[in-house]
Amino acid sequence: MTQVLIPVPAYERVADRLVSLPHQIEPLLWSTGGVVDNDGQPVEKPAPEAAWMSIDAFFTGDMMTLAQSIVSLGSVSWVQAPLAGIDAPSFQHVIDAGIRFSNSDAPNIGVAEYVMSALLAHRHGIAHRIEHQRERHWEQAPWPEIGGQRWVIVGFGSIGHEIAQRARPFGVEIVGVRRTAVPDPAADQMATMDELATELALADVVILACPLTEQTRGLVDRDFLAAMRPDAVLVNVARGGVVNDDALLAALDHGTIGSAILDVFDPEPLPESSPFWTHENVTVTSHIAGAGAGFLARNDQLFIEQLDDYLAGRPLRLEVKPT
Image (cartoon, rainbow, N blue to C red; front, top):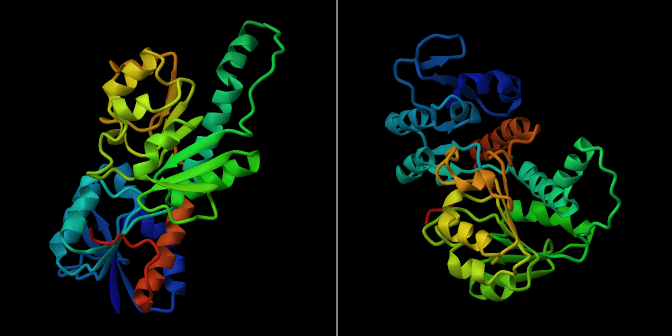
């Protein structure tokens, strides 16, 4: 019998699916009040082998408390997380303890749809059309299509793939940038980070979809922005720390780049005093790109599939490799 630690709300969603797995599982239900069994009885000496850091703990602000519980138990050997990024302090706390850790691709579809909708709205000038409707102003004018554009995706992982798969049918040329330029069927061309400046100069759109690491923190600086075209659009669905805010604001103010679509910031929430809120060439959203309607269901199903693989001794599809 394998004990598995699961936050209470998450267990209620997946209880039936846990029973259907071909393994002997004893669920231990976690809350800030302690650990109980599925009959609600306290467990004196819990020793779970696996744990799920479900999104529920994130929504309630208890993710670090959950992480500390997992580490302090001393028995957990694998954890499934709900998000793609692993830079959160709660995730790092688990990883630093030497526990096997899997991230999630559940947000990816939402992020890709966000990028497509934001860029289509930007290209079509939807905000101006809404103003015209309010003003009862009838105007017919050509609008630019995205077909034929060149999009450079910095950080061509699973999120980059999802974006590329949606953009290419529109006739968009996709250039993926990552550490090694191994050919990828989702991209028209692959480039390395050493070739980034050359690719920036050719891009209509630059999309940041990379993890936040020591190498990518502050990646978008004055030199990065100077390499871009003056009509180019910068989209950030990575992490706020990838961008130097002062450099970006200066580039926007001086026409070094055309505009920016920003879903992530450092810090978050974005302070009310931030110039990004009112900048005429910036679209601000509140870190909601991955929050599509299917996110929760995909995360639940991912945990069930990953737990099945873990208990069967199979490789874990989304395991984060130690650096």
